[in-house]
Length: 174
Length: 287
Image 1 (cartoon, rainbow over the protein chains, first blue to last red):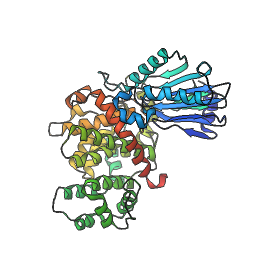
Image 2 (spheres, chains in turn yellow, cyan):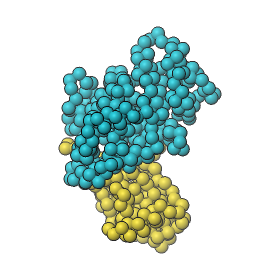
Image 3 (cartoon, each protein chain N blue to C red):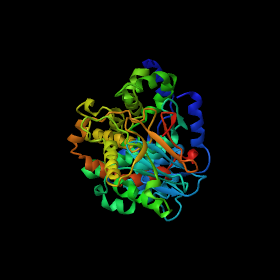
């Protein structure tokens, strides 16, 4: 990426009003002036939804694949898990008027730490469950940036649908 | 590369972590110690008492009325929580605004430290580890070697980034490649220099390479902090310049009999506590 190319998206990422999506958080908005942003995704995954016609945006930052790990936590914080949080994100978009076929779906995160036995590979498990969910519900992913030993910050500009991923000081469009 | 003399000079230059941590830890082993005994240690430590009162008065410990003296704080916190707060307060007193080289602000460093402390404690409770009162401080102070390493790494930043960009790179190897030392080794030296409790020294020294620890070191404690550190980084609590570049020793989880499911449950239980503690006890000048 050229230095100029990197500078422009970074400015977009850092400017204007924003809604911060915390770990285990789910946010949707109909305000095109807003940017949804989530910081420091390690093995966690962010899914962004954008409805270009209605200019609606949504984002989840989930932490673990399955709510069976802790049904009590899932009851209070469904955004903690892929299987409870991701369907809820879609429902919140439908409640604002979106239809599944209109949603642009992007995915980032799922990074990993080195461990031979895969015990720590929460990132990969997070991604596997998401793919199963999407497969079962016929959801197409427009683009994704998943895996590797990276930490990522992700933003969705609700006005334009632009999704940016920042990692190791570099910003690129997803 | 930095030579040993520069490293020792740097360690000597750093503002010292209060000796109160060790003295309180020792006093806690005495069943008969009174509030006045604890107060006696803390009241001559002005850098610490300000932070101590601020943290003890935070919503985290929610006193019924404002705590105005060290004695009141000791009474309110009780033996179980006193050392956690003293360790946090003394750590904040030596925390710089930024750690160059690691590309970390104090807030992120604090958040990571709290995350490892809370995860270590949560996992320790589950496994029923002995001496639980030292687990939180050991987790909290595990990365203090970074305080001494930051400026050296900043001088060799290009070298560090190059080492980190190699496939399979690990932050500890990259640090050694860039400056000849790593933050765990330096953390061990620094925590010994500050005469911190033995268990805190062990965690600082061996949390990246638990298998290399000598036999007299408590392998369970060191392994616990190792897993907690990996989990904290994985969950996005305070990743440094190395991002996710670190290795988990596969033998540790087996030895501690920690199944993947247990790690995930610990993460669920701890995440809200980490967020809350990180926010409520944030270093004063970072609000």
